[in-house]
Amino acid sequence: MGARPSAASAWISGEMVCLFAVMATLPLWIEAAGLYQYLGIEIAIWMIYGLGFNLLLGYSGLPSFGHGAFFGIGAYVFGLFQAWAFESLLLGIALATVAAFAAGAVVACFLSHRRGIYFALMTIAFGQVFWFIAIKWHTVTGGEDGLLNIPRPALELGVASLPLGSNVALFYFVLLVFAVVVVALWRLVHSPFGKVLQAVRQNEERARFVGYNVWRFKWAVFSLSAAVAGLAGSLFSMAQQSAYPDVMSLHASGVIVMMTLIGGGFVSFWGPVVGVAVYFLARDVLGAVTETWLLWFGLVFVVSVLFKPEGIAGVWQERVSGVLRLRFADAPLRSGRTGDVSIVGPEHGETKDAIGQSPSGR
Image (cartoon, rainbow, N blue to C red; front, top):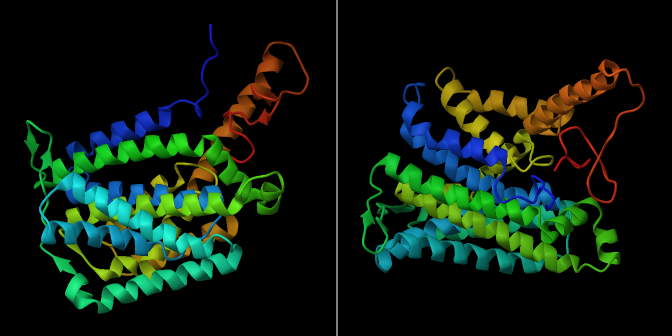
């Protein structure tokens, strides 16, 4: 009988099943919780955006402060296609994703040979270039007003057509896209490609010395991350029925960085998911109490970076692994045996913690 696949090698994990179950039931209870249906759409879209962004920040160690540009490109391309060509949901999303990938690929050609602060500064520069174009190219982008009245095309399935005019219907379509993105990115980060990205994050020079073309991997991950941002942007423009340059600003790019860090993107695949949920709940719950909710969220972010840079996911992992370590430590005492207890991974004798994670937390 073959060995049981590990959680990392499986296509579907227990965390995915729990997350999809909670998200699928969200329209049933979100209004009873005092919130509104559209919030679920926003959260799902920004979760897609955050997971794609974390390919760069969390897995590759590449800080991008201009990623809103690709989110905005996806939004504008989707809106322009619906206005200038014809209404088509899937084709519009596909073109928006391809356009963001192409823009990211071009930008990555200039960035991939940089690292650290120089990489970050160049992402800001390119992000501002795209934002300035969106502001000034009135005949195409609509300037500061953006594109308005973008339709929500129906989902055409050959013999059937599913309208997405209602927020509930659109939520379930976005949730379907979200599920596909989660599974695809989960497999990507646990593939050999994902392992090389983590090697680049740990030590770029060593990765180069052992034979990896670091420039090519950085180019590829930046382009893929831009494509996911463009996909999220196309869904956002359909949900908002508008596309505007504010989503490409430096401020908007900084928001996704905050979400990813406070959620724990450096230590967990699910960090951006947690961070996005916390951000939007803080906006709507704290925002109902005080207009300065962003000040308080920013203070929490500062404290998190200073004292717990692993974020919320890191705190959760520490608590769970601590409980399991105590449980394993008590087992020899109950059985009358003493000695050190260690958990060794199934491959290459790699020592892992009590939740089966390697020291990197992934």
